[in-house]
Structures are given as structure tokens and as C-alpha cells.
Image 1 (tube, rainbow, N blue to C red):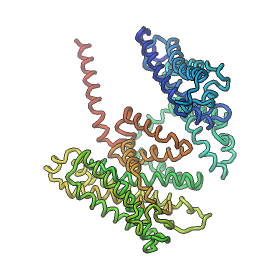
Image 2: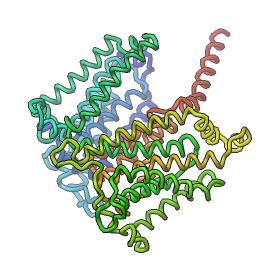
Image 3: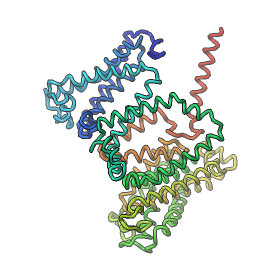
Image 4: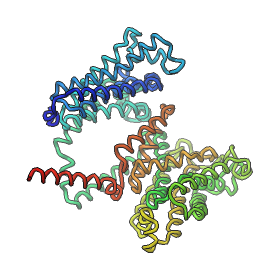
Length: 573
């Protein structure tokens, strides 16, 4: 029993009211998963072959979350009552799908709920038909009780089990993506042992869960983190060198070990990293919200396409290496051109103006007006790869773009890091906080804003140039507002003004969805839920800058200190 559970008072009427509220809330979530089609659609995707599907897991995880959160947040007098609370909450959660089964047996709900199909009822009742309506209720009671017992354990015991479940879910989701490249090399026996054609094997699931639990316990016992933190700063810096070298080797060998699909996904992530570094200057450092950032990306891509294409709209027939610098320069020039008219605009008005610029570029690129030069809806085709190699060469396909994008991203990351600590970077941050005060202190607002727009546009133009080489064509449909929204969102998720946060945000918002293309019908649903959760529980971002962290958490720390002071004064009096 945990210390928190031992000191909790006995549950009263108010406690059971809160328990019922948790049950109703998660019951509504369970019904939502059923009626939007997540449970029946994902039921065809095994998580553990022959044992558990992804649709079943989504429903069971809802019941587990209900039991765990209710037990953690509702006062209980001991482990027995905590397990009872978990069972009650899980039972209430499971009651909702059970009622859905009974309602579906009495009335045809498909007229208003298209996903209330026989396939859904088969999943909910474990193929028992209407007589199995009790299955969700019983599953909720059992899983809620297990979650309640987990919540009573000390954190030292909770952490290995929870991480084991997370790793089980991750490997089950990525089983197909990992298995295919592993079958093509020396890891074939491991792939067949761990992964079924879809999902994990039962033995693989047990092994992954066990290894994760043991590794977390071992790390805790050996106190690895505490020992590393206790080392001198110079020793820690020396230890980073071999770790960075190992990371570099892993990154460089991804196309060889995991295949071209992973290389393409990481290349796309890297393109967004380039644009993210650009918008991080414009928005994260200078505070200029630009919702038309995709326009600079389009300028870089179309410039490279026009200069290199061997098709109808090609102008010069240059190699990609010669055209890419001009794509960056033209994007920078367009950034200056679009930045001049809006230098005096601030806040929401600036966002609307830049949004208009982005839409103008998109419409013009696909219009009949510029069709003789840009191809209109047909676009520019036959854009050559940067390096022409045979199809069986290591650098064939997306692999060469992968390495080019990595080198460019590393260079731009270094430039962005140096800019942040420079005099210009400090001027941007001063302007972001208060333009009037910054101008009073001697910051030239016109020059500083223009430099922010131009450098941000240059980074986006480089991303567009690499994109043209990756795809081999450029269409007006590629210039979407959603690209600008994605770049802004990855800054928010990663941490506004943080260069490492740009990389982390791109991985979570661009890389992970690319690996889940099989669930594209629900992509934006998960995307929205992730953003809402992010804003509620970690508003500063996954890897924020020190300034942002202090701004968001300093008031909380002051309140905590004030509360501690009040308590100590009360105790002394």
C-alpha cells in the first residue's frame, strides 16, 4: 500500500458521487469510440496476433484509464476500497457499451449511427451475440479493479508496469513497419520470433513486456540517472561524445537497416524541421505570427522545378545543386517583398495578412493565368534527382534525399543556434516581448523584422528545394494551408523559441502520423486530441527553451513557496 493511500480518509457519499462522474465520463468516451467507428474499424488490425486487436485495446484502455484515474484522485481508506472504486468505475464505463448492444438489438440504430453495425456488436460481445451484452460490463469491472490495484502500488512499482504496457502498445502498432525491413537482412529470425504478419506474436508480446519491466527496475536499482547527475560537468560533456557518435551511426545507417520507407519518412520530417527552424525565427524569436509560411516553401520548390525540369516547363536544365541556392535566394527575396507591406501590423492582423499572402501564392500557382509558365493544375514534372544513380544503388530513391536533408538540417540547426545567441537574436526576442520598448532601446524594427522574414523564408525555400528533388514534381495542390498550420503546430508542441523543440515537435506531429497512414481516416481526430492534451498538460511544449519554462512556471513556484511559508508560520505560531 502506498503512503498516500494509507493517509486517505474513508470514502463518503461525496466520494461515490465523484466515482460515478468518472464512470459516466469514461463511459461516454467508450460510446464515442464505438459510434465513430474506431472500435469496429481497428478490430481488423491485430495488436497481439490471435489474442488482442487494436479495436479491443482502445476499449479496454478506456476502462483501465477510468479505474486508474478514479482511484488516484478519489480519497479511499485502503487498498481494498481502492480496488472497489476501480471496479465500480470500470463497471459504469462498461455499462454504456452494454446498453448500446441492447439498444442495437431492439432498434436498428444504423439510420442515425452508421457504425452501429453487426461488426461492432460482435466485438463488444466477443461473438456471443445479444446474449453476450454483459461482456463489456464484466470486462470493465475486471479491468477497473486491476487498474485500481495498480494505483495503490508505490510509484516505484507502477513505473515499470506502465512503461511495459506502453512499449507493448508501441511495438504492436509498429509491428508491420519494423517486420518488413528486418525480414530482408540478418534479423529475419528475430522478426519472425517477435512479429506476426500483423501485430506481435504472443511470445514476442510477453518478451517485450518483460524486458521493459526488468530494464526499468534495473535502471532504478543501479541509480543510473543519479550517478550521471552526480558526475562533474566536464565528465558529462565527455560522455556525450560517444553517445552522439553512436546516434550519428544509427541515423546514417537507417536506410540500410530499415529500408527506403523509413528514409522517406525521416526525409519528410527533416523538411518540416527546416521550415520549423525558419518559422522559429519569425514566430518563436521575433514574435511575428506567419500563417502563410508555405508560400516561401512553394517559391523554393517552383524555382528548382523551373530551373531543373527536363519536361515541358523546364527553362534551363540545370542540375539540382546549381538551382537549389537560387531557390533559397528567391524565397528570401519574396520574404523581403511580402514583409515590407506588413511591417506596421501586429498580432491577429499580421496573422490574417500573412494568411492572405499564402493563399494568393497557392491560387496563382494552380491558376490558368500562370499555366503557360508554372503548369497550372498539371504542375511541373520531370524534376531530376540531385544525384543520378542506378535503381539498385544505395543512394537510389529517397535515400539520397534523406542524407541531403540531414546535412542541410544539421547546417541550419547550427545557424539557428548561433543566431539565437547573437545580438540579432536578442533583438528579435526583445521585439517579441515589447516592440515599443525594444525600439526605445535602439532596436531598428524595420531592419530586424525584415531580417526575420528573409531568414525564415530562406530556410523554408531550402525545404521546398529539397522537396522538389524528393518528389520529382511540383503541383499547386502541394501548397496547402495545412502545411503552414503543421509548421506552427510543431513549434507549439516542441516548444516555442526552442531549436531542439523544433526537431522533437516535427518527430511527434509529422513523423509519427506518417507511420500511421493505415489509420488516415482518423488522423485529424488523433491530431486534435493530441494538441488539446498538449495544451492542457504541457503548455510550454515537450522541449521548451529556458525562458519559456521560467515564464510559464515561475508563478506556480512563487505560489508554492508562499504556501510553504504560510504553513511554516502557522506551525510556529
